[in-house]
Amino acid sequence: MATELFELCCKDIHGCDFTGQAQTQDALLQAAAQHAREDHGMRSFPPQWWVQMRHHVRTLSDGRLELCCRDVQVACGFTARAETREKLAEMYAEHAKDRHGLWSITPELWALVELHVRIVPA
Image: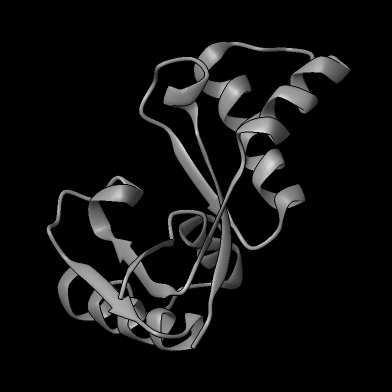
């Protein structure tokens, strides 16, 4: 199954460890802007900033999806890997319930967690 995500690594631009992935370039750029506000103190984004960000976006495809607890600020070594987002969400929700006592993952929480899904080689 072919899966496609867009990825942007801040270390390519500013040297920090942030890596964002999203299903669309627009969603990825919004995540990058949020990161720039929160971690780099940026308050405005001139047109050349958006051009630079688009230049560093990579397309990832043909791999498995992966989500790690540690990537969402949980001190846990669990990693879920699946072929589809639906299966990954199911596995992650089951783990969150069994290991962390989180009985449900709201759509709002999943939207934040999903920012950390990445594609790894199959």
